[in-house]
Image (cartoon, rainbow, N blue to C red; front, side, top):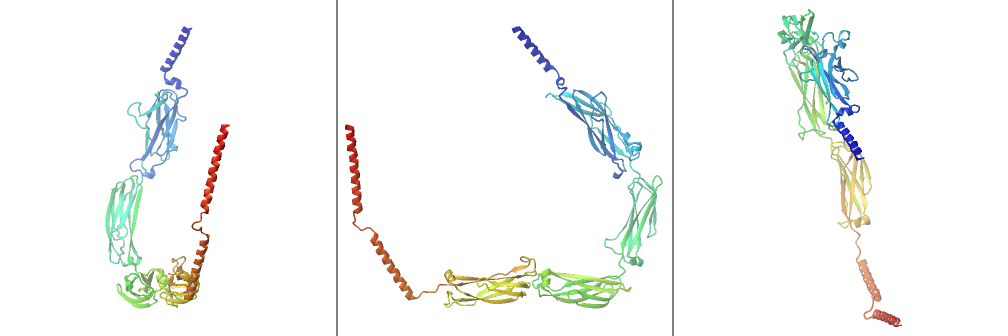
Length: 574
């Protein structure tokens, strides 16, 4: 029996040893899968001279093939549109070395399928890709992907295809004509304008037999050839005529024409326009405030602003029958004629209003209009703006007591206090719809409007009460509300004035001497009666009643205890 058991254990150990020595792939063949990713990418560019806009966006096809019966992906091709990347994904269940080739299928972009003719140069490289599947120490299998270009050996590399495109033939000539004058220059008759003409080959092929012409001056030049991006510069000049001034500008056109290597003509042109002085005369009006605000900063309502108005003929023709107007004051003046660069000056004044204060400034515009020798009207305008003080609608209420207490010190119940209430507009805006309220008397008055600096006074009376006398003083407040023309004040222009408050002393009515003596005697009698009653109820000195009662109770208790002891002993003796 023991021999059989030993044989069984020997078989089990042998089986376990065999399992340990077998490769993991024997057991993992049906359950362990490793996935390899074979990347492919494509870059797209143009050959020298190719414009970015001439590089087409095409879809490229890449094909994967096996050389040793290796597993293949679901599809043996992938496509990439434009520059980009993609990949093939392959699952492996067995260890081993698998070989592939990766190529670009350019046939899809040739012949009728071509989108750019024969300009495309598609990479024909062959990448040899090796996928090594091997056991890993954790019981799984792993993959290693390596690629070589054009052979199965050599340095490893990325599987990138480079596609390029030949340039499109663009012959081109660019002409830039520039007047060498300041930006704000206006030509006058007799002026000389200098020009610079630059001819550039802005195409991508050489241009030959170039002729350059300046239409205004009639000059011309020739250029044998211009390579790509090559330039030639020419200079010329022109004297401005009166006809140019009448036209309003000097227009000058330069052209350049030549042929590309195929004999195809190409041309470029540019126009430069220089403005001239207006043929009409021009009037400039300058208006300036010559006064200074009283506070040195801003004008107040009622202040006077003085102005100086200067009209100048800064054109090129005499202007006649000129009328000068001041829009703010309504004044006007006439000038028979003004020669070129001649001036005339006028003065006027204006009184600042509340509306100006609300606006924040006073803007005054003056105009001048006349005609040139051709009868064509011309005019000019000048303005000046000065600041006004900030709008400030404000009211103050002042309340004073106009009466005197009868005793000269404090008001007693029944006396009448008279008050004077004054509402003053101490701001710089007229306040309207004013309501004045006396809180103590509950009197109320209405004021239609108060201009800045104006005041209005009211009177009120109040009779002192007992409670006022007990309080020791009486305070009375007067308030006022109104509407300001400035909507930014208060709530939609509602304005509350600073209140007026006054306080007056009060005192109770004094008592007479007889009443005081009577009250004192009454208080004495009441105290005597109280003491008598208290003496009747209180215990008398020497009264022993409570002590005797306590002694009797104690004796009875002792007797009861003694009786209980005697009774207890007799019970024991029996």
